Image (cartoon, rainbow, N blue to C red; front, side, top):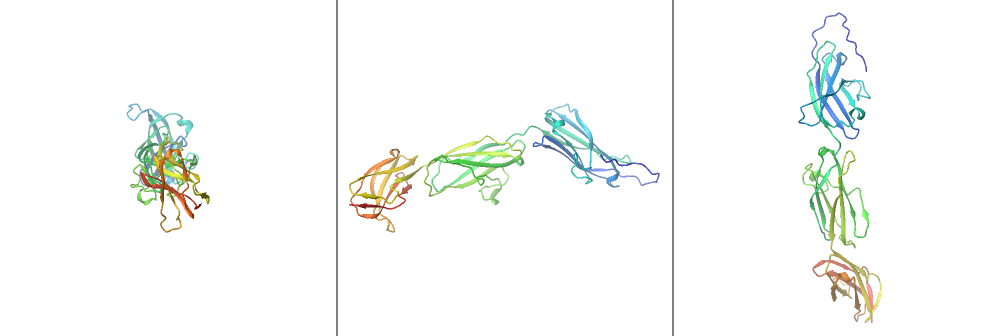
Length: 345
């Protein structure tokens, strides 16, 4: 600590004014498990006339406790690290480290008073802070889709809270398990509470409702169960419980015919498909796929879960043939052969 001389050289001086405490800060760091005390102190005669800045730190078990025993007393300093941050910047500090603080959770109150070399003193200023173990964020679903069609935009809205306050929430992210077993976790998969100014569809900024608008691929060949996993993380690295959302995507994918095969009239060809959450499928074929609007003819309507249908190839002569499969209850769910095939007599 830098010692400042308060020796009176015998010269008469004007009465000194009292030092002034501009503010007091008491901040608990969850990350370092430490309590930082700081106070901005000024004196009309200058920094060198400040003799001491004394603090008393009290602790009680709960906010309603009557007893408030003294936990620690000492002096704030303005001499730089380790107890202070910047030397001689009028901000006097003291760091109560994790060893001293230990497991003494509770409510802390500090009083700070400054004294100058002339014996003048400032008013006593006080500040309070709660010291408690960090609690992870909590997630609650507000609006989560249970199903979607290819090309839909899924909207997710989650309420996220944190006992340490909203400023403690660092991120809200999600990942996806697709029906084919692929697990996707992408840095761009996150929810936002930034309001309309952001690009994620949030309505009001900083209202605790985190939102994302997630488009789906209209040309996807997948259908079935998508599992979304949502998790929130705070600035100290603590994570919430994972919120799991099962979202179904009804659909059909034609497996064959998909290639430039050659089919023969009256022969039997097995049409195959994959489907999910569909009762029946309608099968059709066209021999004029090269037309602006191809015309389709009915083959059959069968149970979707069978996964195949043995088709007796009709009489035709065309190299512009395709098969279309659709959901009779929702014609927008369909798939068509990827490539044209040929039918010859």
